[in-house]
Length: 212
Ligand SMILES: N[C@@H](CCC(=O)N[C@@H](CS)C(=O)NCC(=O)O)C(=O)O
Image 1 (tube, rainbow, N blue to C red):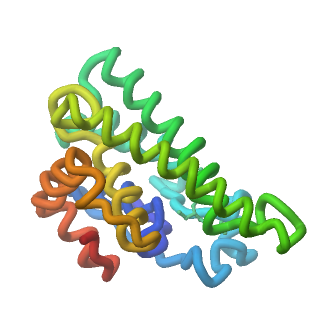
Image 2 (cartoon, protein in one colour):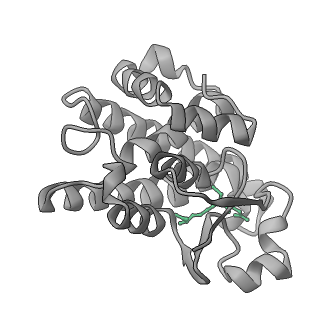
């Protein structure tokens, strides 16, 4: 049995990397930088025609898209307790994943970082980025409100969604200069709990990144 994660340091693939560390089975990492165009190389496009990371190859089967990979790994490794345990929990996890991956990542974050995706006119970049920041701010407020009433994102335990939320928290603070600690206390408390896990620390150290 072989498992390989194609990742880029600090990208959304970090959530899958954390989950693989939590599961604790052997896996290999292949670096495909999302910032230098490697995700668009012919070799990577053969693996994932969408030209993105993460890609998980598990026994020669290729999986793409963070939500699908996360739920596949978590549900097939129940001993790691990273999956939602109930039907309601699973639906809530999908609800989180769809919104985070779609509206927040492919919408707001992409507007800010990959503005060329939305227009052929560079003169329009500033307006698109400003709107992206507005959408991101509303999304982060919603995340904070949701986390203010519960210890974990889904059910009453650490799960796949908490690992994915760490990626956005880091992007907000590290990559976008938002005062995450000052503005989002419940989300900061969740991040602190997640960061205490040795699996999370290992993934972060291996990727050579920091969260705070
Ligand atoms: N919807 C995809 C998004 C994947 C994605 O956008 N990954 C980024 C890194 S966070 C990437 O590979 N970007 C490279 C590019 O856009 O060329 C998922 O959930 O996996």
